[in-house]
Length: 474
Image (cartoon, rainbow, N blue to C red; front, side, top):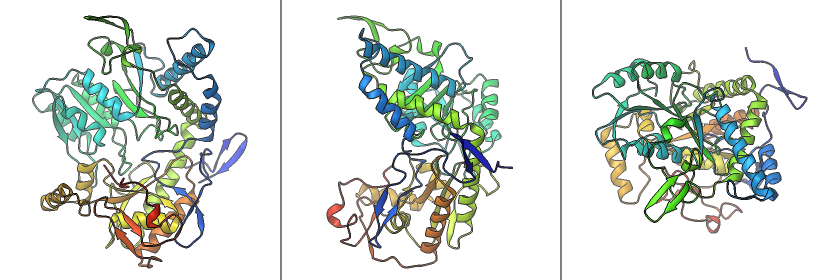
């Protein structure tokens, strides 16, 4: 039973209201009808806006910004304290508060954190890393540089079982590591991480958890040895992320990045590395990003997991069941009774996924993501793409034409999403799916794969198409 309301700053919140105020929540954008509509950000799985509290904290810190760990001035001492406070907040957020010997390494994002770890593991080409086809590319590609990968396959609905993982762990040769996601960025599915960690640990195999998608929505399990996650998915889009793991692991070998700040002494033919965590954070660190990261963690802690999960459950149920009930819409992923994050990936029969996303934006001011979501193998399985279609898409891409790349549309919610936002999206998708014609025609750019409305209206004219970047790269 979801509580009928929550408290925020003394104000009673009803079901389906935003849990925090986000920067840009009241922005309006031009639409093809000639009006400006309030922008509805349903692309939170890709990146989140800053909360107003986080932005205010950064603004308050900016006048006091200075280099950290290497200055005697008052501003440097203050910045160092703020930076290290954020590190402690990260450790607490990842349930490492009572565990001696863990370190939080501040980096740019989850991708950098996993690349950092893959380098520091000193893997041999014959070593095996078990991972899954559900993973984001960030938890697939780094391991291939140093070791062999053994895959846990998924069912047609995009899920796998603990037994599937056990089978991969028990296959010879014995794996060095299990790398797994805490939540799918495509379907919002939540693998049973605790049970999987128990099985890996029973076999003496350490676990790394990609918590990028999980961290804003659910508590991070304490069982994995290593955890990586990002501020930009946690309402702190200021360029900071974290890698958390046992300190003893990082005390041996060379750091991932080398340079100033990582050393105690350098001679022309010798280097003495600094103690942790500085030895793993060469160069001038992102102090403001760390402050934002810590403040976002503090704000989520203030809201509390019961309220966060209740809000998520309400939106997930409305979003996924609503889309599944629209004629012509195919919802990808597990069945509707499965607990997922408030993420829904879908296609509309007879319409290219890029066209659906373009129409939602240009006609309804709804921001969604389309494409493959940096999880190509997973999406191909969800779509049932066979070898012939995959080969055709590959040949097309090699010629510079992205039209044939399979894909889908993804809508995803966050703490600033309201039930009314979800209902508005459902109405827009139903309008498109039932054949309501667009106000203008759309043309697809074969190089990027994106569709653009054929119009001279402000905001959508040919002259206002800036740059050459596609909307669905990756």
